[in-house]
Every structure is written in structure tokens, then in C-alpha cells.
Length: 611
Image (cartoon, rainbow, N blue to C red):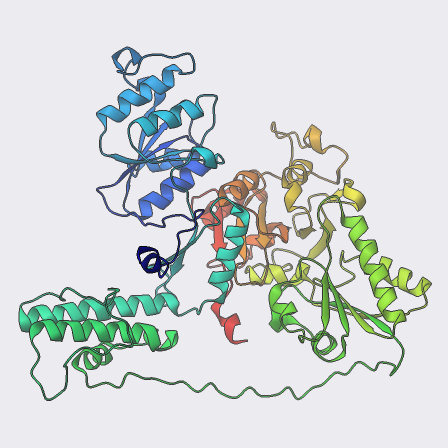
């Protein structure tokens, strides 16, 4: 009988995590390390209202120094810890002085609830064991076997109405099976959610507080034992006994109000929740407001233009098609028709966004190129052979490339290959990411008074060989594609010597044609341009490598924009670069960055959701 009862309940399957959230001043976290990861952990803790202690030896990163100087965190140097001789932990062959000092420190600071180790040494496992001995959960970066807890890939939403950080956060974990994939899943979840979702959280929060305050004012009671977050009742189950013509007890009234908060949260459209007024909230809580709200979207008008691709009726055909920078709205009509009306087979590059691939009808076969490091040439040959084979069978093949096919898209190689095999491909242009992505980041590639010309180049040559980069010209914008992964080498080839002699760094000799770039030259890294999870890291050539490292994991594809056009339209704008000499550049950069060394901007203009 017992086994029959137990079988009605799900069997626990190990491998998951107990997902919790921590907040409030009663929690203290000790971060052992002073690197960029420690700064990231500290910032996350500060946003949760958690007290942060940093324990490190020697120097710490600039961000942690700044936060310590502004009394946001407490920094403690290892060398100032109590003498190990006072420790109750005796020395052992595998135990270092630092572990004994840490034990004394933890004993004297019983308020520490969590420990995070970001910097690895030979003592790291021993330090973790000290944490275990004090019954304090510990996280050790990149060593999951030593961890009691882990950090999810998180995102905190901003309120679209005020621009301020909202109460809404999401977190994704793969439980150690793929940290970078967790970051990607997080970004895709964020990009799929309505832009009004944080506003909905704000308004529902007001509704909940109003529900409680009504109860306090009219009944001198709280919200009852069951709130709208309680698992005892569900939104579909009615509140017992309540009717308009029957007097409620204060418990029933409280349950009814919180129940309606739950129903509204569950069933109203996100946009409707975000637009609730206080009068509507009062009507909801009084029971005089209907619990449904419908929005009928305006009908989508068909385009008046229809650019058809004239294709032979029975002979196979190959189309070399550009998908644009990524946003589906930037597809040309010709590309859209090729994908949705004509394609029998789509052979896509791996960086074409999912939003574009989603337009392809389900009956069309889609192959994604396997262009990973070390396999680029093999994958290229594989795709060209597949296109010829399918065209020989009478199929219409769409060879889908990111951006424009002939702007570092290797379209020329494919044209000659297909022609040699009896097929004259039709090249369908696309909007080049080299020109479109910068304006999504608020950067014009040319601008009167700032940039009179633009050069598009690559940061890596055929089969990974180095290429010559253009030299510095003040009125010129340089766009570097496919170079973010090698940004240190690209920057070293561009900038002048540390002593300012202008001869170029030794590591960059022979990689630049023309004058070296001043270290204060503006540069922007644009990742996943035009996509909802676009990120822009902007700084100077002298600081961009550190800025990109501080920003966290990279988001391919990425490109660099180098030159004074980067700051031309930022804030109040600056279009006097060519009218003033280089003597004003330091002031110009300080004004642009607002006193910081770099800025990071996430997302694209919300207006693109309606285009």
C-alpha cells in the first residue's frame, strides 16, 4: 500500500539546483579576489542590498578601487589579517598560511553568509575546505566540483517608461553543463519578452500594495493567510462564498482582493497590465471591473510592391542572397521572396539570426554551415558542393549570407565555383552590417565636420593570416569586420608607442599602412548589431581591450568602428572635430564618456519593435 501512495508523487532526479534569491542588509558576502569577475559579483550583490567584503592581496581592479573609495564595498588586504598563530586550525602539509588566516577571519566575522572565490591559486581547494569547515556556502569560479552554489546568467529589466532598473529579473542556469549557452538562452528569453513586461511588474506591484492598504484602512487587518503568491489556491478556483450581495468577513475580503490580483496577473495581456491606471486598480479590487480585456491588433497592410525573381521553370537555380545585419525588418523584398516563395533548399551561414531563419516555410530544407574555428575552409567547400548537387536535381537553392554577400561574404569565390559547374548564380544584394550596425548604435559612418570618408577592412585575412590595417586620418572612419576576437592585435597595430614617438608598437609593426592612431581615438565594439540583444562597448583605443573584458562574454558577430564619428551623435553631439585641433581631444573624450573610461549600452531603439 505504501509503495502505491509513493508512486503517485514524482521521483526526484538529481542534477538540478535549488534556485534561491538573496537580498537585504542582513546578508554579507565575502569575495576572495580582486579581478573583473570579482567586480561583477560585487555589483550583483550591491544591487541586492547585500554587504560586500573584498579580500585580496596586492592590487585590485579599477572598478573595485572606485567602489571602495566611494564606500560601497569594504576592501581587506590579506596582509592585514590576524596572525595565523592565533588560529585554532593547526598547520597541515597541504595547508598554507592564507588558509589559517582565513579561518581566523571567518571566526571573527560570523555575519558572513556566502563566499565567492574568483582568483585561483594553489591554495584554492584548501580555502574552499576552510569555508566548508565554517559551514558557509562557497562558489569557486570555473571549479564546479568545489562549489556549494553557482551564479545564474541573469538579466535585470529596465522600466521603458522611466529608464530606471525595475524589480524584474530572470536567471538561467545549465547546472554546469554550458555556461555560455546559459548566457545565450538568457538573451533569447529577454528578446522574446514584451518590452512592457517590466512596466507590468511595476503596475502589479502597485496593485498588490493597494490591495493591502485597502485592507489595512477598512478592516484593520492584513492580507490574510493566503496571498496572490500562495500555492493553496489557483487563479481558476473561485474565492469561497463571496457574492456582491453578501457581507464579507475581513478574511474573505482580503482573500478576494489578493485572488483578483492573481487573476489579473495571470490572464491580462502584458501591455494591458503595464497601462493600468490607479482608478482601474481600485475598480479591480472593489469587484466592479470586468476581468477581461482584449486588444484587437490593427490589420497588417500588404506591401504595394512585389519584386519577383524570374526563375526558369524546370532548371535548377542558385541564388546568392544577403540577409542584412540581422533585424528581419531590414530584409529586402527580393530576399524575403527568395526565402518564402522560391527556395527549395536554404544553405545558411551560421551567423544568420534565428529571426530571419524563422521566416522560411516549414517545408523548405535548411542547412546551417559548420564554420567553426579550424573548419572554415572545409565548411565552405561543403556548402558549395551541396548547392551544386541540389541545383543539378532541379532545385532552387538559396545560399543565405549575413549582411551583403560581397562585403567579406566570399560571394566572389562562390560565383566562380558555381559558374565552373554550369550554373550562373543570381547575386541578391543585402543591407551590409558594416553600414547598418553603426547607425543602430547611434554612430554615423560619415558626418559633416567629423568624418569625410569611410574605410571597410577586415581584422583577419585568408586562413587566419594577418592583414594590413589603414593608418590614422583624422577625418576618416575605419570599420573593422571579423576582428573582435583578435582585438588586442588589431589595437596594438593601430596605436602609437607608449612614449608617444608615433612609431607603432613592435607587436604591430608591418600591420599598418600610414600614421599611428592616438591612444584617445574613439572606438566602439558593436556586437549582434540590430538584434534585440545588441551590445555596444565604447571607449578609446587605449582602454578598449580592458573595457571589452570587463563587459563579460563576447556576443558574435561583432565589428569595430574606429574614429571620431563614434562620438559625433552621442548626447548633445559633437560635430566640430575638424574645426578644432587635437588639443581639444582630451576634453572632447572626457565629455563624451562622462568621466568614465568606457560606456556599455544594451539593446536597440524600442521603435524598431514597430517597424
